[in-house]
Image (tube, rainbow, N blue to C red; front, side, top):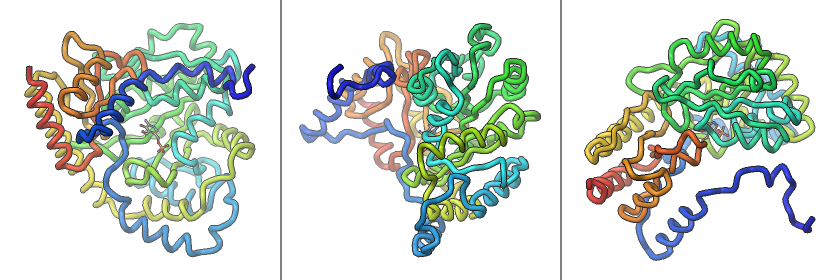
Length: 390
Ligand SMILES: Cc1ncc(COP(=O)(O)O)c(C=O)c1O
């Protein structure tokens, strides 16, 4: 073993396959070419002012300067209970059914360490947020992929899951509205998931990162609003996307009290909780007005229409998503996800994400993020129209 060799667990994470694409982007930028990135999903506009003001007050209050408790401040848990009641019609006990997380990413990763042993399985949507597979592998367990089927509205075919995978499974990761496909939860999916989770004793983890970012009148539900969901599952709610707070690391886990307690036991060994000033800013966000979110969604909807319109003009068959900040589109015939992303970069100096970044079932697609200012999106779309029409 060399001095700096990584652990076998880290080595088991598939190699990063897009280094070459990143190298090409860097080379173009170094050559002075104006590259427009539609890759990453990180809101381009600032956190809403009332949240920043609450943070300013909270950070000036010395009571926030100590180690936080992993359970979180009562104000934060109570604000989540109010929000879940008002927004989703879900009753949450602020004492036992909600706890802060340092972002959804932390929460998903640590849930793997709280619940998975070697030989255990986590069932993970494919394509999906990479931590659903990286977390289980780093925990020494196995991720079994659940392909999201376009003809099922990007739901997994739950009846196709191998009985052995069911019997070894301890966690099932789902995410609607979905990154990267932009799909919203197909009717009846959550009910069926609750039924199967009960039958197979699997803890459902619903990643609710995008419920506040929806269009065309669609209102995303909470998984916890499904009858029986709290018996078999938890939901991770992140303030990152809907409230433009990606840098703040503010999220919570809600639902099954025993599962949340197990997550807490793990976390007491790992981190020291979420900065209390951030928790108080989270309270302001959750209790605050809905207008800024509606305005933000109107901006994304406008950008979405621009992107979808331009892609259709160049012959890409694409559906306008009802949620998330992404447009998910099939690559033109004759291309893989990667060769198409390279072509777009070469010809239009625009970065799109190859669908295969999100798992094998993402092959044949590419993802465009809507978190770039209007004028830059318009410019990117214009370049794609000009250079890729053929
Ligand atoms: C589906 C999904 N879950 C979780 C996250 C990360 O959320 P957070 O910023 O709360 O860690 C992202 C970010 O892109 C995401 O797309």
